[in-house]
Length: 119
Image (cartoon, rainbow, N blue to C red):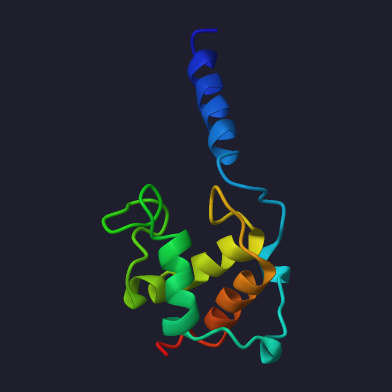
């Protein structure tokens, strides 16, 4: 019984941490968009302002953040984390505490799917 308490604690902790983000049952690999119809996918005009206002905020991915992919305040940081950003956005697990519109999701996914250009 003495050895089962640490095992139960580990199991319970794992369950708690697995529930910390939004619904993980959505498969981000199956999230498809006809990017030919998405016009708002330029980094400077669309993606950067969206990330700055919804992701690079205090408590999430602001400068110096160690959460998940870390800070998302520059093109280099956002581009380097693009695969993880795509998966989190497509699955709906990010941003925590809010929801992206379909148009916002499509913009991010299409920007990443087009190679994350610095445009």
